[in-house]
Image 1 (tube, rainbow, N blue to C red):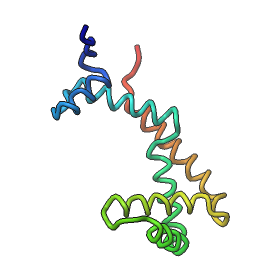
Image 2 (image 1 turned 180 degrees about the vertical axis):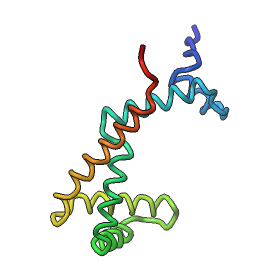
Image 3 (image 1 turned 120 degrees about the vertical axis):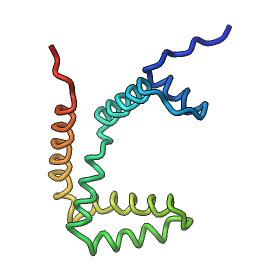
Image 4 (image 1 turned 90 degrees about the vertical axis):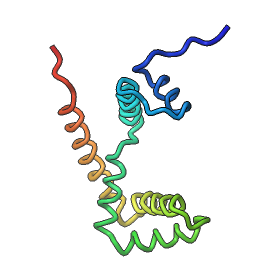
Length: 127
């Protein structure tokens, strides 16, 4: 007995579009975006953390450059993915570094607040 396919407008249908090398329909794309946003909200893995780490790197360029060089040496390969992994590793190390870790939490809190404000602005008014 074949499985019943989920209807359009669900994350499962979005994945089915992708598996079939199709462009997802608008309903499925919106459902996928909502599911990803919900996951990021629940797990704290939003863009806010990335923005906070990037701001910290701008505030401490020498330390970030040093950590990035160390991460780059430890990262095998020279492709784009290796560069991204090295940068992410350096940003994480910077956020945990003893000389700047006290600055990270306020930056993250500010970015999370900004992200929440933006999310509230995008929500449709409820009647």
